Amino acid sequence: MPEQTIIIGHKEFQVACQPGEEGFLLAAAEMLDAEARTLLDQIGRVPAERMLLMSGLMLADRTAGVEDKLQAAEAELASLREEISRLHARPMPEPRHVEVPVVPQDITDALTELAARAEAVADDLEQGK
Image 1 (tube, rainbow, N blue to C red):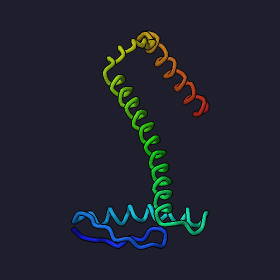
Image 2 (cartoon, rainbow, N blue to C red):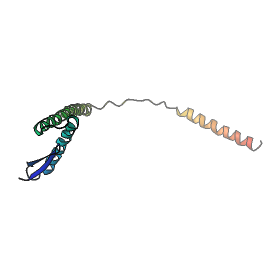
Image 3 (cartoon, rainbow, N blue to C red):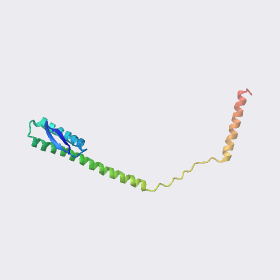
Image 4 (tube, rainbow, N blue to C red):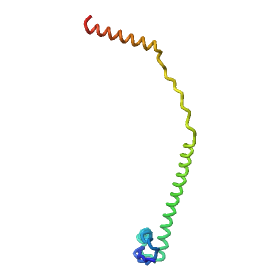
């Protein structure tokens, strides 16, 4: 089992871990060290046991807050998934019938005739007749 030297609050510790877990151990040690340094900056010199206890409690408090946020996000996600499922399950709305007015053919023919006459009059005026 590999041993790693970690530093928590300016103190070195030898810790064994499973092969391949070294990166996780070092990352966890960095998190604990950050809490320990904060504690040492605020209080000053503290016995190692108390420093580790307080740092662990501070980290646990932070973790609990993150877990609360995670639970709230998971609940919201579940609610949104239910809403999506409900929306997908509902039947499609019936198509609406829209009536479009239609101009009768005899009126269209009459308007075409009037337009042709107006163009003829305009042409006559342009030619000076």
